[in-house]
Length: 314
Ligand code: 13P
Ligand code: SF4
Image (cartoon, rainbow, N blue to C red; front, side, top):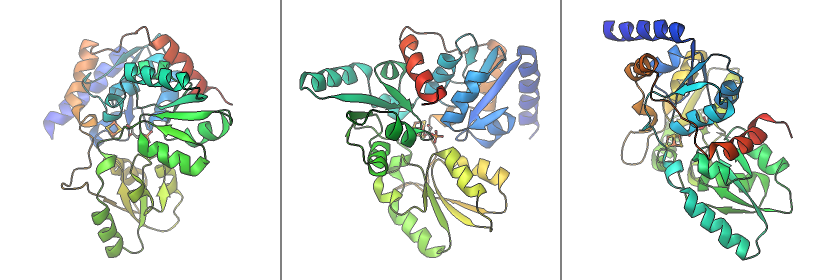
C-alpha cells in the first residue's frame, strides 16, 4: 500500500542521513525484517552489534536486546522503536530478588555459578557469571562453567530444564517462562502431526518439555533456520516458536511448507512485546533520535559478563 511505501522511503532516507544500521530479530513482523540490514537470533544480533561501525544502531527487537547492543558497543547511539517492548522472562526475575536468593544459597554453603539467559535485565546480567543465548547455551554450560560448581540458571525454567537434560549438569532453576512459548498447545500439535505424518516439528527450547519431547528438532531461531536449510527435499515444518519466524524461513527457503503451531485457547503465537514495533515507530526513532538506550551504572559489570560469554572464545 502507498502509505507503507511512503514510510519505507522515509526510513531509507533517514537511515542514510543518520548513517544508521537497522538490526532486526526474526520475531519482528516481515515488513521490518525486510528493511533491516541484519536479521538474526539474539546471538547473531549481539555479535553484529559489537562489530557495527555506523554511529547509530536502530534495534528492532525488545529492549533487553537493544541494551545488549549498547553494552557491547558503548560509543554508538542505540535507538529503539518502542521503549515499552519488554519480555516476560525479564519481568520474572527482579535483580533484588535474585541477589537475596544468591545470598541465601551462599549462606547455606552452596558452591554455584549463576548463568543467566540473555532475556534478562542488565542488573541480572551484572549479578551473573555467564550470559547465554539459545545459540550458545549448551556450549557455555558444558564447557565453560567449572564442573565442580552447581549452576543457578535464571530466568527460564524450560530452557534450564532442557539444558540440564542435554548437558547432565545439576541446576537450580528460577521460576520464569516466556508467555509465548509456554502456551503452545500439545493437543493441537499432536493433531497436526496426525494430519501431516511426514512433517518435521521444530521447537524452541523455551517451550515446555511436553512440546519438546514431540519435536524432531529443538534449537534457537538461528539453529532452526540452519536445520531447515539442510533439508534436501521439500518438507512440511510444524513450527513451535513465535510465528514471525516463518517469514524468514519462507523468504529464504520457499520450497518448504510452514505451519504455525497454535497456542492454547487461541491461535495467538505472536509475542506482544515484539509486536509493539511498527514501521512508523522505526521512522520516528530515526527522525527524533529517540527513544535511546542510555548508559546505566549496572551496564559496566554486565558488559564484562556479556563480553566474556558471547565474544571471547573459551
Ligand atoms: P533466539 O532468537 O535467540 O532463539 O531467542 C528467542 C527469543 O525468545 C528472543 O526473545
Ligand atoms: Fe520474551 Fe518470549 Fe517475547 Fe522472546 S518471545 S521477547 S522470550 S516474551
